[in-house]
Length: 486
Image (cartoon, rainbow, N blue to C red; front, side, top):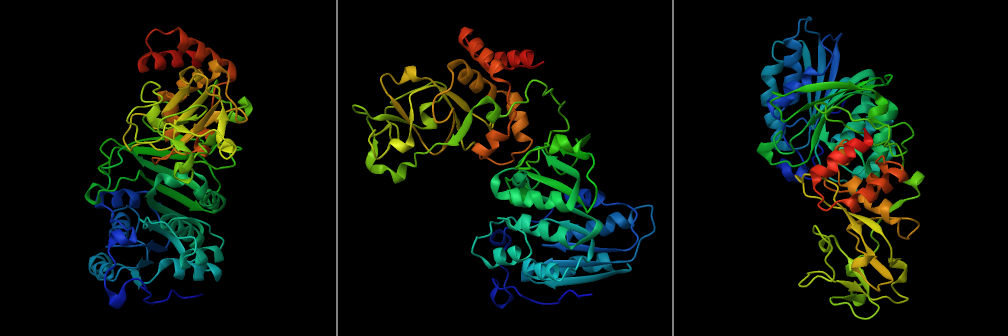
């Protein structure tokens, strides 16, 4: 069997100097979270070989050993292999783990090395060395032309971030039945960039447990981390069954709650994108019996707004003239439609001419959703109904690139359907569904296609109801939608 290499390949840390956790995208695990992660492993072990990649100060390994020591089962013999890239942290790692390993029948191996380079070599030699893996990997994008990207492609792993690379490699190095527990950003659950990673873990492992922190800021508040993090438990080469979904506000676990869901509820059958939906275990699941249509089945499409303003500067107009088409930004829809907008920092119009026609939509009824939201907004999806009555005698519209546009073959929608669609998208019902698989601030067209929708008839009925209301409040919308979908 190939032995792990005691090497030092800290290429970005000259003369052994520390690189720094921010530069490496690395953040330390609070002790209470480390203890919870360790508690997710099986209590009875017949020998083990633990992998801790991106070990930092060693809190995860120490928590793992503490959990074994405090269990009712006899303490097994085993090994622990800890990888750390930063020279300063290696010294801290050695000091912190010395006591934890003393008087235990556990071998300790610390590797000051590039984990991705080292692990890909082990994968190429088909070395599945580990029974357990516990990770808080670094969060940092991987450049498409980087050495790391080349190493990963050599072993069939295609991903865009260090954290997914570490998890995929750890899965690849686990023995059959091996368990991985990792705390990682939730961003892997959706979006095209992480699709190969989702396919990789679903192909090679079963999801056993997902823990969601309902606050974005509390779990890693000492490091001011704003990513929405989850704890993921996987079992290598296992048959997929129900998944435990648990939640807590923060790492203190004072309000811990859990519910088991079928795998089909988390990853929908037939979903080619393999989105991972994480329901809030504290919420009752609402009936989706009437909300089971896809956009495609409704004959509706959603696309990113095609007008990239800085590329078309010569055609943009602050004040529309003649046949200029309205150029619509989210700023034109702040509670009401306001166009043209005085003192607007962006352009109000785009020239309607042969050079711009391929970027324009014909006048009609559309629904737009902005592509970016702030982290703590009440709703992640903010939709607006585009009514051509606000743009008299304008035969075309331009939609700026920071908008998503709902349309029908690049033409407008039925008026009632469009109004009903905007109401539906702005509901708390949709927000709950959306948050199950989207943990970041972007709202992409791919995400909107993944949502379930009511049939066209119900959307049209919702649109008619909107027109009958003298005053439309969010509470009235929620009550009516609940009645319609009950």
